[in-house]
Amino acid sequence: MRIRALVPADVERLAQIDSTFSSESILIVEKTGAGLEVGWRLVERALEVPFAKGRAYDLSTEDLARSRQLWAAGPQEALQLVAEDRGRLVGLLEVERQQWNNTGWIWNLIVDRAYRRQGLGRQFVHRAVEWGRKLGLRALILETQSNNIHACRFYRAMGFHLCGINDHYYTNEDLERDEVAIFWVYELQ
Ligand SMILES: CC(C)(COP(=O)(O)OP(=O)(O)OC[C@H]1O[C@@H](n2cnc3c(N)ncnc32)[C@H](O)[C@@H]1OP(=O)(O)O)[C@@H](O)C(=O)NCCC(=O)NCCS
Image 1 (cartoon, rainbow, N blue to C red):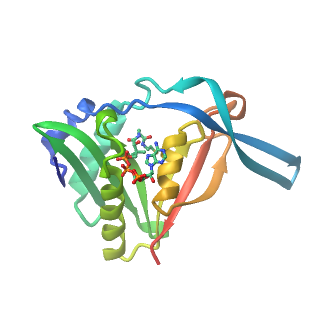
Image 2 (image 1 turned 45 degrees about the vertical axis):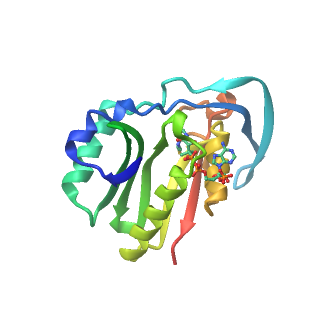
C-alpha cells in the first residue's frame, strides 16, 4: 500500500473507497439554558442497536467537483492524498487552505473499512500537519457528526480538540435526530 498525491484520474475512482461505518455508541448533545446563557454538553450513550451510516458518507457529485477544483488550485491551496493498494483506492485526505483565517479545512479523511486500525488515518493526519506547518497555517479544522464515535475517538487520539457544536448544521432537527455537527481543531502554532 502506498500514499501518493491525488491526480485527476483518481477522482472518478474515489467511490471505490468503502466509507461506511457503524457506531455502538454516540455522543448525545444536551442543550441547557436560555437566551444568551446556553450550554451544550456531550454525553456518550451506548446504543442497543448500532447506528449504521450506510452509504450516506459516499462522495457526492459536488464533492467530486470540489476535488477537481482543489487539484486545479495547486499544492499551495490544497493537500490531496490517496492511499492505493494493488490498484484500488483505499484512502483519501483532502485539506483546503482557508486564506481568510489562515487555517486548513479538512474536507475528507476516509480510510476504507477493510483498512482501518492499521495506521493509515494517522499517516494522513501527520501529512496534513506537515503541510499546514510548511504553509504557516495556525490550525487544522474539521467537522464530524456526533454519531460517528469512532472518528471522534480517532481525532482525540490524534491530538485534535473539540472547539464547537452547531445544532442546526444539517437540518432544523439535528438535536432530535441525534446527529449534530461537532467541530475539531488541531493547533499548529
Ligand atoms: C476515522 C478513520 C479515518 C480512522 O482511520 P484509521 O486508519 O482506522 O486510523 P488509525 O489506524 O491511524 O488510528 C490511529 C489511532 O486513532 C485511534 N482510533 C482509530 N480508530 C479508532 C476507533 N474505532 N476506536 C477507538 N480509537 C480509534 C486509536 O488510538 C488509533 O491508534 P491504535 O490503533 O494504535 O490504537 C476511519 O475509521 C474512517 O475512515 N472512518 C469512516 C470515515 C470517517 O468517519 N471519516 C472521518 C469523517 S470526519
